[in-house]
Image (cartoon, rainbow, N blue to C red; front, side):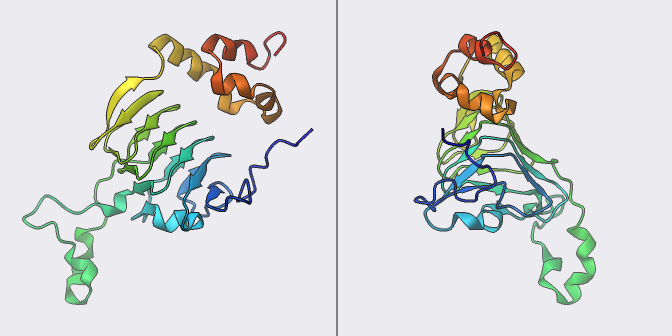
Length: 216
């Protein structure tokens, strides 16, 4: 019987080098990512940390859950992109150096929106841009080309610029059940036995397959 896929392998299927698992790739202490979350890019997916996570000067973190799917061109704009907006000019003069650098305090310590958090089992479509400090809920889907400027609820389908909720994938009661079941934390072997249910079953079937249930 084939083994459970190894979450530490950079290219989960070598014949498709455009796909990388993010956990074994990323090295920044400001990025946390769960197992099996992947990025797909035909050019250079291994450059995700520098090409797709922008202006990441800290201290805010980018936190990504397990089993997330990121299409080509997904970008995370971090808080380091902020400019002052409380005076006549937004231009960051001190970064130009020279005598202007004496005023570096004018661009350090700008207010931030906190960590950017992507939940578990999130699908971000082609060229989605995520702005600083937002939370994208578990099981959410964000349409291609969207700009996420505010929080997206769990199990929502969102799209547009700025992204708005188009619909919920389940009703509120089922969303609560799904969050409680949290299949993304199931042991890998148990998850393997119930993949068809996780991918195509009902919430009732998923509940029946949960660890500890009779016959699961």
